[in-house]
Amino acid sequence: MENEITLNDQNFDTELVNGSEPVLVDFWAEWCMPCRMVAPILSELADEYKGKLKIGKLNVDHNPMTASRFGISSIPSLILFKDGKKVEQWIGAMPKPMLESALQPHLADKN
Image 1 (cartoon, rainbow, N blue to C red):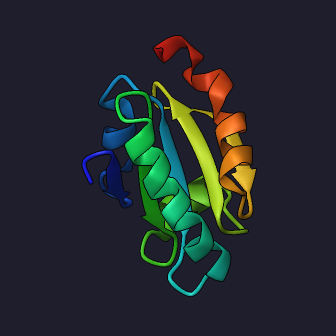
Image 2 (cartoon, rainbow, N blue to C red):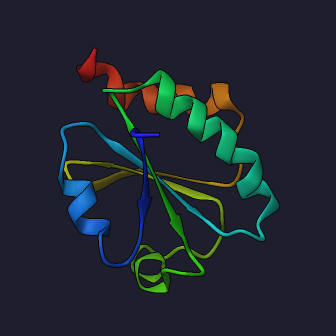
């Protein structure tokens, strides 16, 4: 899935700065059931918004430095970055229509 990127403490900043589209980062862990509920929704969004949005996934257990840097204390946490800067954050599992609605204002200029 070319529109989904695996992020870690080492590549996080590089991946967010490269590319013109916004990046929605999913801060997750394997043991987190709500994270598992969100994962297929994010995969669908990655396919449906190809060229307008990238999805990044960062496992908080394996990458504590980046999770700590963004103050992640509840997962799933979704942070939207544009031009490498945090522009929006959502905490908890969200249904697909609600997430799409929240993302729309940030994707409007990429029609």
